[in-house]
Image 1 (cartoon, rainbow, N blue to C red):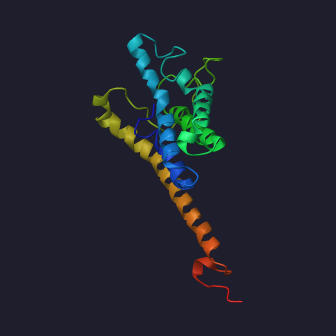
Image 2: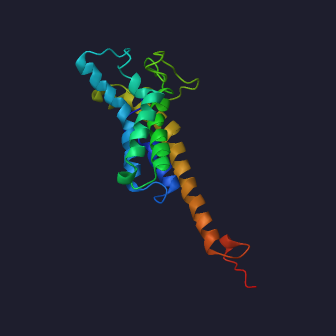
Image 3: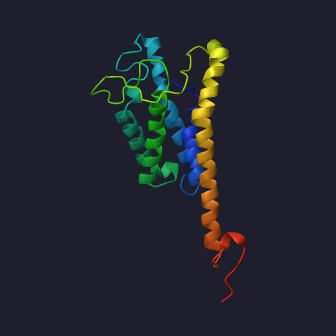
Length: 193
């Protein structure tokens, strides 16, 4: 799995790129929670549910159906999230789906049950550059944890930061164009005709 610190990076980057008018703070928080929610399945270990079980780690809570259900709840809660139903559904769906897709690009574990409960086959994506995170906190703060941090920084944090920055720049360019009537709005040349 990817670390719990890294999973929220995807909805945060998307929210920053889109801006608070499209992704209000409550919706952003819902997206962060949706990106973390699939890993609640680790509680299954305490109830004797095996890792490879349909409701074990990377099972149903990592499925496309689960992400759709979470997004559906967000759409119903649109007023609380201070947004429209479609925006709530799409943003939370992307946030929830980011979790299993990040887990599917790790180099360990049993894979992700994308199609659960209809098909319990576990899948990985063809490219698997992220070092799988250990379950133990002690191992997370070891050399193994450093390898995990390096790959997550390179494959998740860096692209997400570039995406968020690109969104900010694009929004500023659009705002500058709206506020200027000249042919060269970014150069400060106004149309005086």
